[in-house]
Length: 360
Image (cartoon, rainbow, N blue to C red):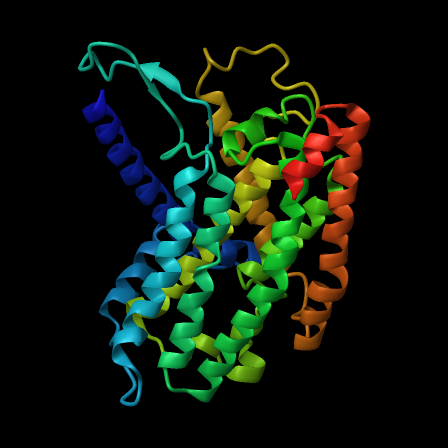
């Protein structure tokens, strides 16, 4: 079964890369179509039926555009910075479960049934892994801004670092309530703990804090301070062109997917479709394909919200962004911890003494 584990793991890695990168390409089309609809425009409609081949045309354009590296730039770090941003976004997907799984013999190749999980790696400390990997994304932005040897790019990189520190604290504290209610750092356990009710209800404050912080962590409007074109041209990627420029945007959309998947996992019940009552008696071990459909559907809904918010709200001032992170979201995330502890105490899910020792 060791070779089966290796083979299925490689298969899942290949599927995740193909699906995510394809989804990233069509998220660019979705963003342009949705923004056009909101502004009473048509959007891309020339390349392919209804403009469906526009992402392919954009990809070909980026590949064949001239790749320019400034003379005074640090070439080594200038080149690896976009890769850091994209890779750290993709590897975070390794521990996110989109369903339980099913038993298979792989068309009779295997001697005994193998349990195929809808997850690349089932890690007991998956929550810590997610935050460790996601926090590395800012290095790509900071290194790219510094290596460009451009004042505006450097300002964009510094803004990204300050914004990450400001919102990463609130983001991490908002998930403490989820860990308290679950008693586990494993994402599968967090989803299974929501089969009776989604954590969004007892932890609504944490849900809001995590949602807003996710917008800031992905550098999406109205939190796109690192690339505010009205102030610093294009920020950290001012000097980038061709595929290096495209990789930064691929990283942004991949982070949107990761953030949406984490919101679904932590607060929206994962693969459970109903806020209360689980699957209403449906045997999801038999109908194993239903949980991934529900999970992906929720992710698509959140991706729409990401796009909707970008084209609805104006960009904040930098001081407003900092005040929101430190003076509003951070205190709310601390309040959320007390609420979660009180909820656990009132529902008597775990002993309060063990809860306090586990939390600290």
